[in-house]
Image (cartoon, rainbow, N blue to C red; front, side):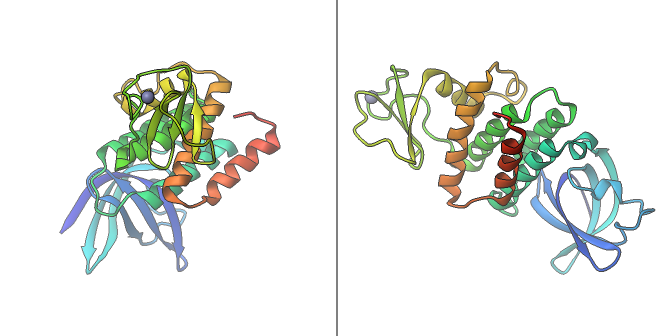
Length: 255
Ligand SMILES: [Zn+2]
């Protein structure tokens, strides 16, 4: 039986001389691994469509518990991502986050939409890496069921106060009257603008998600919060994130 679905290649792993396995994020089957025989040959008809970050229509068969690629058709290659080292590093981090966090077999239409839209803007350069990083990190966690309570203070329901406190690990907001904890690595002070951006990222429809206005300083402070949110909930560090941040340090970029 042949299965046809669309997906984005998140990782390629070489197998033998000419073959490779690809990990693919699909909308209906979650992340699946497909063996693409001969796809590493230069003249293979599946070479382009099985490349990293290609969005392709894939037709494959299942034998025992493995999938084997039959034919494929490229929908979008997001070619420019591979030509910019910072974009490539960021997309690789997104890929690692997805491979770590998306349960196999989980339908993920929204996660695929998030990835496709993000790759679209990385590819055409109309949104910066600094803008896209916190957006992708935070919305991904919201989509997999880790959305924090952002509506207001979890004790008195105050929508906004001079400063709020965000308990990252428990996903709770406190106003300054109700907060009686301590600021630490997993509890941060959060200002009105930062909270506004987090709410926007968590709750906007996809057609508006990439349209908010921000500044370099705000992107940076929100990114610190969303990164803490990711690391606290996965209790893990990501090599691809370390690499992305090392690039920023080298470039003297504040993003
Ligand atoms: Zn309160």
